[in-house]
Image (cartoon, rainbow, N blue to C red; front, side, top):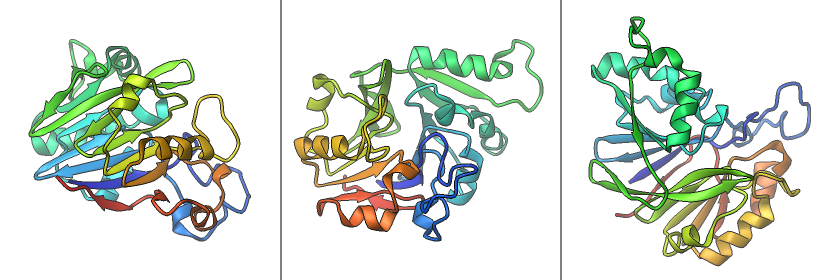
Length: 256
């Protein structure tokens, strides 16, 4: 199973509009971050987690010709804002794109892309098929078993995902014990680390490190990063040996 980080930035991305800090003006390509999303490739299946405003650009960079499914963590715009751009996949695959989301997130999608759900649909609108998923209830896409995990984004309940020896947690500020138990024995954990300073709705760097030390995956990658985490090269050098800062375009391979 191959994982590609399509985007590793927070809701504003990096660089931030109108910002002239050292991070936003960095010449290191690892400091340029689209909104957070990953691509999971297993056999012929291409599965994306989250489709934010940069979705079109991310699909072009990944050179995807097919899209098996999109998993949605929650309904904030930086995670669903690009759903309209599944339309080329509809055209070339001649079928809807499957989107897996919690029931309350489906309401966000139906509100934002209301035209995709009209009874008398306008030609060329996105053709999507919604599938309801619930925390701790495994579901299957082709031969991959996916376990949705309850995590909290301040007061908003959202979903992380475990797929085999890999888990993806973004936008979290708290992970309940029942979900922590399902994050043991990982080969790779991806977890959000917004910045150095505390934040009311996201783990900061130290909180993410503490969780990684508790769960003890073989390796861990930080994502959903703001310019408040500093320069990629400098900050990563300060991390423990098995913790890395993800960057856009990074690819990792997970054993079966």
